[in-house]
Amino acid sequence: MTLAADHTELIAPEPSRLVILRQVLLDRPSTMAAVALIGVFVLIATFAPLLAPYDPLAQSYIKINRVPSAEHWLGTDQFGRDVLSRMIFGSRNSLIIGVLAPLLAAIIGTTLGVVAGFFGGVVDRIISRLVDLLISFPELLLAIIIAAALGGGFWNIVIVLAAAFVPNFARVARAQTMAVRAEPFVEAAVASGVTTWRIILRHIVPNIAAPIVVLMTLWTASAIRLEASLSFLGLGTQAPQPSWGNIIRDGLNNLFGSPWPVIGAGLAITSVVLAFNLLGDTIRDVLDPETSS
Amino acid sequence: MSEALLSVTGLGKVFSAKAGLGLGRASEVRAVDDVSFDIRRGETLALVGESGCGKSTLGRLILQLIQPSSGQVLFEGVSLTELGAHPLREMRRRMQMVFQDPFGSLSPRRSVADIIAEPIDAFGLATSRPARRELVAELLKQVGLSAAIMDRYPRQFSGGQRQRIGIARAIAAGPSFIVADEPVSALDVSVQAQVINLLQDLQESRGLTYLFIAHDLAVVRHIATSVAVMYLGRIVEIGPKHEVYARPHHPYTQALLSAAPNPDPDAPRRQIVLRGDVPSPSNVPRGCAFNSRCPIATARCREERPELRTVGAGHVAACHYAGPNPIHLGEVSGMSAQA
Image 1 (cartoon, chains in turn blue, cyan):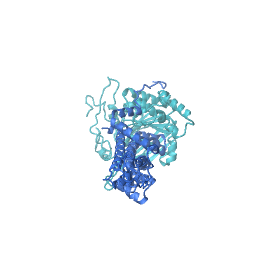
Image 2 (cartoon, chains in turn orange, brown; image 1 turned 30 degrees about the vertical axis):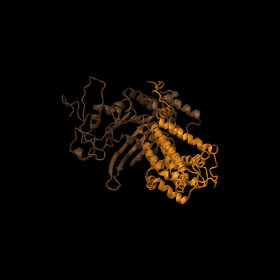
Image 3 (cartoon, one colour; image 1 turned 90 degrees about the horizontal axis):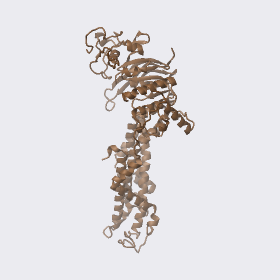
Image 4 (cartoon, rainbow over the protein chains, first blue to last red; image 1 turned 180 degrees about the horizontal axis):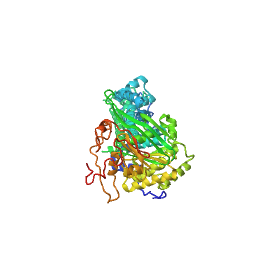
């Protein structure tokens, strides 16, 4: 056997991730529908000023609490504002907060979890106890406590929800990091002389990314739901800015006169949350074949 | 006789496992106990022993991948055990490792080029991306693979090919010393010889020094200069290959040799079958650690631990009754050695 000999016959190549993803979508009509629905809501949020028939903030005291009509498809609220326009603009709030809060939580939580899982020892104990403390509160309760302290408003909601989600990301990231850390290729990197931070960035993070992405999709649904809950309670999006949560709250005053604002906003919340959950489940199945049902 | 590239003195590692909340009694495991040896430049020391005897731990202690509990490692005149994290990382350029598991030791998410270039990147050995690709291509050629595969991923390769990639990574930074931790035991027998030949060719062309860890003596016969036999964390016999193979002085070495397949079908085959299992390293027998399984153990062996003593030129063994052919296989004619 000489050095020049070529030992490179290849084993059959595998289909790419994209091909697998397309096949999965074709196999699951419900996921296709979820993706389509999310797409529709994204379009609505993007083109809200073009689609909304009225200014969502414009009040009219001659058109208070109207039932649905050709003019106002979902009727008007107690200030005479067009409910459909408010819902269309409200979708922006829901979607942007739904993406931003889990993203922020993923960045902070993953950083904490990776540091705790990789270095262990005292650092791990401090971070883990902090996470245990936060996780012992239900998300909504924690969000209400922080929101009560910080007050409402767009960025405060993002911070509140991100803080409520951080422990979940930190836990998953920590457990995954400890598993990947024990892999021989990490020891091989240490033996090769790779620096600790480079090992974390090149070997740990790419290998724990899949469950973090799944978690982000699933928490997007929760973020939308929680933003609506906070706004419903008056701790989230502040009047007069529209949000699906405060549309329901305003609609409750006139529930028996016209239930349509409540029904419309409720349906919007339910369908978007359901769509993100379905998408999250599918992404989990694709990225982690072992847990697929 | 050239100078020692690596000199290990009194190296030991105690793992302690605390139960529950860290209260209660901690159980201690002496994975490696008072190990000393030298490896001369350009030579290969084969370290053999049953699984669990601490040989992989010893390899990692030498490279400081695990912190030793005691002892000293002198490599190229530098005491590794006293180095801080930064200078130790610098030393890793000179000493590398080939791993047992050709699947787990290559990151599934990195391309072959990124894997092989890991030490090149770590030490900034390539000035530009084309220079890096050129270095990787050259390394691939040296381990018998085509440069065309560098953008592929490890899952597309067989065990033998992956081990070649792992070897390319180990030699990438131009080390003088490589710990090969059972580099062929996960491979098909047909591929084992190829990989051993590759390691040998690289040793000649690059002047490498190896610590070659294996669990049987048959594999190392080809590549070793010297052989060290380990049992329960201690070295029981060490010496030049021909000495150890021809005149094993420790009964354990003799038993291991008798278990290795002999290519000559007409040679008299007397196999020593050791009774029982290896005792748990957390509960090593008193006296000689081997006494519970040794066919010639006496009361003395159960009381007094034998130290390593010289039995030939550069040949030492830790047995009270060390001598050529201690179990007297040849002399007891007609008797089955399977006592």
